[in-house]
Image 1 (cartoon, helix red, strand yellow):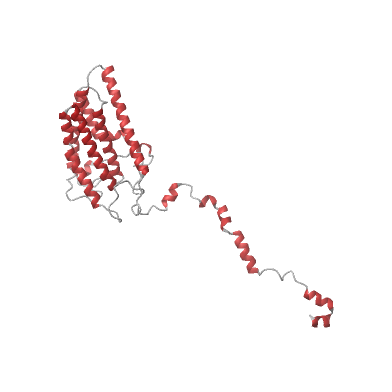
Image 2 (cartoon, helix red, strand yellow):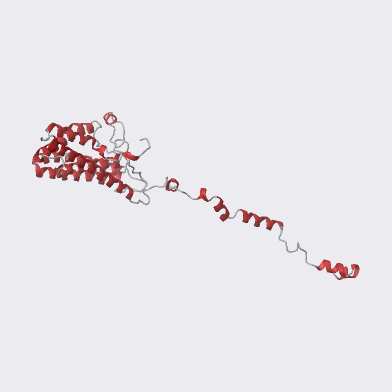
Length: 305
């Protein structure tokens, strides 16, 4: 500045010493970074993509974890339990309403006792098709495939014990032995009480209802652990119904009690099947686990089975 002042005068030196507008300007690279940060900050991205970033349904959340092993940290499926209970109440209510209508028809309208053949056919149909009153999917193993030794839902679609009876055994037992015994013993009770809607018959309907729910658990949902507890409930409900029968007609009670031999065999088969089909974490829990299956009401399910 001294040299400039001597050669060019004080005015030039003053101009040179004045602060320039560019002296305080940030480097071009700094400006570019600041502009990019302001334009593409996480907050601005969130505001622009708010609708597409936040999941709006539970399905989108569950789909991301669909490959997670449900048995790593097993959680009780309370939703399934509620649906099982709802289906049981629905089926029992429909049976009670049907029997009430039949009692009114025979007593007040026809003014006659219930014909034994009619009662037999009715209860035989209930023994085979009680699931029509149950809103769950209670599908049974395919009889034709079972006879041919092929796999179907609930039979040979999993590791089965070596002592599993041949497939032809099951339709013979249910159609020709268990079904007729149930129908005949129930008809004896109706003949003794003169009514369809009575405690012993409803105990039998409870047995059928539990059996329908068990079919959902074992065949449709393939919950091997819960199926063990389910089949034990089937056995206990049959024993209860036989006891209720015995109080009215001892012979009917003994007949229905005889079916416990087959049911206990089935319970042992289901328990052994559970043992032979463990998860990666060990034996499957003896209760419905979240994520191992989805329980749905077939009556309101629009998807094709």
